[in-house]
Amino acid sequence: KRAYYQIQVGFGGASKAEKLKADVESDFPGLYTAIECQVPTYRVRLGKFYDRLEADRKFIEVRKKYPEAMLLKMESKDGK
Image 1 (cartoon, rainbow, N blue to C red):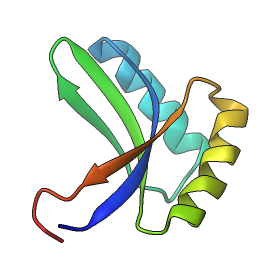
Image 2 (image 1 turned 90 degrees about the horizontal axis):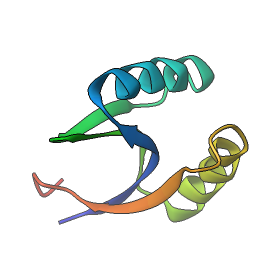
Image 3 (image 1 turned 120 degrees about the vertical axis):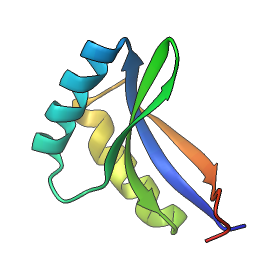
Image 4 (image 1 turned 30 degrees about the vertical axis):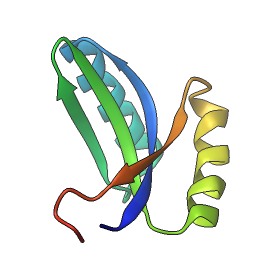
């Protein structure tokens, strides 16, 4: 399995997550953005970074706009 990093920008109910995702896509165009649903919580995540340094740099930039953001280490489910 290959680990990667994602930035969790925020979480909440479905409507809050949809609005947050739209804001993030506007603020950081071109980066992968997704809502991870674990009912009742919807998490908005940004990016898929395989390089920790690249993840850290983007995380610093994202935290300026979204101070609650967290950097997460993920495991690939498909082994890629």
